[in-house]
Image (cartoon, rainbow, N blue to C red; front, side, top):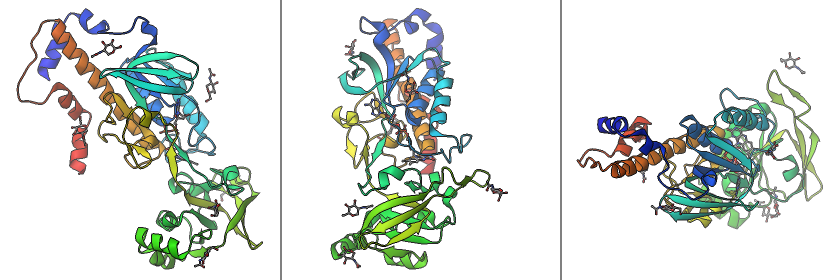
Length: 385
Ligand SMILES: Cc1cc2nc3c(=O)[nH]c(=O)nc-3n(C[C@H](O)[C@H](O)[C@H](O)COP(=O)(O)OP(=O)(O)OC[C@H]3O[C@@H](n4cnc5c(N)ncnc54)[C@H](O)[C@@H]3O)c2cc1C
Ligand SMILES: *[C@@H]1O[C@H](CO)[C@@H](O)[C@H](O)[C@H]1NC(C)=O
Ligand SMILES: *[C@@H]1O[C@H](CO)[C@@H](O)[C@H](O)[C@H]1NC(C)=O
Ligand SMILES: *[C@@H]1O[C@H](CO)[C@@H](O)[C@H](O)[C@H]1NC(C)=O
Ligand SMILES: *[C@@H]1O[C@H](CO)[C@@H](O)[C@H](O)[C@H]1NC(C)=O
Ligand SMILES: *[C@@H]1O[C@H](CO)[C@@H](O)[C@H](O)[C@H]1NC(C)=O
Ligand SMILES: *[C@@H]1O[C@H](CO)[C@@H](O)[C@H](O)[C@H]1NC(C)=O
């Protein structure tokens, strides 16, 4: 570390500040290109802006929480609209001169070599960058049953932390595949006690076999949490009251009301639903460029967010560290920004040392980059393990 600092002071400034390489048109060349302008991409951009990296964020604007009324469980921003949250972030980041943001859809990312990517967008622009960050998110696969897509994120929810509190002590419905529906009960047991699991005809002998394997204790869950199981086939979920209109801001309560219609012509009333439906990568960019998929996620190193493709990072919902929420998106974006900044710094340092004809220290201690990683808290994960 001391040598690292000593070198920085010894080297002529020109060596470090002039570009080591780059295409003819420097304006289209970036240190980093970030795909996706949700909280993960914006957080990565913020980190890079603070240390004056030249970075471009390209965003197609199809946010996972686009339809949700308010963002929750994000300290300092609890209860703001998702649009306000992103607007505020963009406004703050736009004050930093080395970074920029644009609307667009990235159509292809090609790795040129270990330190360069070529990026194309739908408008025909081409860029190059040394690193890429994918903050491209997940897309929820909703059943086609009438009333579900129409009311998604406004009474029909995916995450109890995000929207449960507004519907506490209300009649609740659980919707989802048979293997995921009863697990949801653990997450809502502190919020609601009147719970119906709508299995939608999936409690067949085949379905029960799958369920018993996936969740051997499902019958105990049903008993302990006093869950009613309704196996009738759902034909429609009809809204009869809008919690966006009928609500109490002071108590943070939204009074949505729905009728669940069945194929036998009857219906049951519920205030809100939590669902266990599957999701997929919102973009194929990651797998197309060779990032290994794991289930519906992109494989990444949980410390650095780096993927198996050198110089490419996966952050936010799209990555594999098992967490899909705004705080995780911001944390992982920040982590990627730190690793990228340090990676570029060590690459440039090495080139500068070579260009200056200096010899590189060669002992058994940690490399400069590993040393720097310790300062960003790598030890934290080790302790945690
Ligand atoms: C109904 C609902 C409510 C939620 N409420 C909350 C909440 O209250 N609190 C909370 O913490 N979390 C909440 N979440 C989860 C939260 O929305 C996600 O965890 C978060 O949005 C993840 O951020 P991200 O940046 O990874 O992805 P996203 O926010 O989904 O952003 C991904 C971006 O990448 C862009 N993109 C994709 N492909 C391309 C491409 N090829 N070119 C350019 N751009 C591209 C998309 O257009 C999109 O803008 C909610 C989720 C849902 C579904
Ligand atoms: C990688 O490709 C870029 C862009 O074509 C080029 O400028 C650079 O010299 C290459 N770097 C290596 C290490 O090959
Ligand atoms: C970019 O998209 C956002 C919405 O996602 C919109 O508010 C903004 O006006 C767009 N900017 C431009 C320059 O089109
Ligand atoms: C209910 O089951 C039917 C038939 O399998 C299916 O088409 C529909 O999408 C399901 N609806 C819900 C809400 O799960
Ligand atoms: C659930 O509904 C399906 C489809 O109607 C039916 O085949 C199955 O027997 C029902 N399960 C139970 C436990 O009643
Ligand atoms: C909201 O709840 C508070 C506290 O119970 C109550 O005083 C207030 O009148 C309610 N507001 C509305 C609009 O119902
Ligand atoms: C993740 O990256 C760190 C830092 O480069 C490295 O020490 C660690 O071994 C990597 N983890 C895995 C699982 O590859």
